Length: 99
Image 1 (cartoon, rainbow, N blue to C red):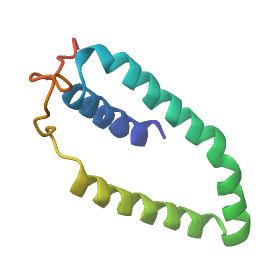
Image 2 (cartoon, rainbow, N blue to C red):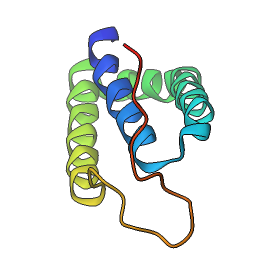
Image 3 (cartoon, one colour):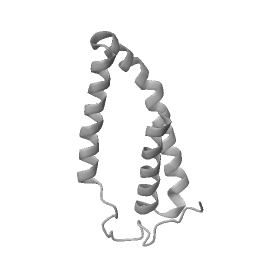
């Protein structure tokens, strides 16, 4: 789970640094962690019911298909750089991470 989750974390950090002002970076990282933890807490019961009903292989294949569909949707919707907006909502330069 750690190897798979590492790619999601890096992607979220990249989007947060490109799309939002620098002073919101810590808030967005906190929201990312909170949503990830809520998925772990609230996702266990539905997955357990799916495994009991369909078996672990079909549940894993279904989860993989849902993940692939979500990946395609995100690839089509999210761009590397935000469109230029009126006002000062988006920084011109992304934040540089010190490591």
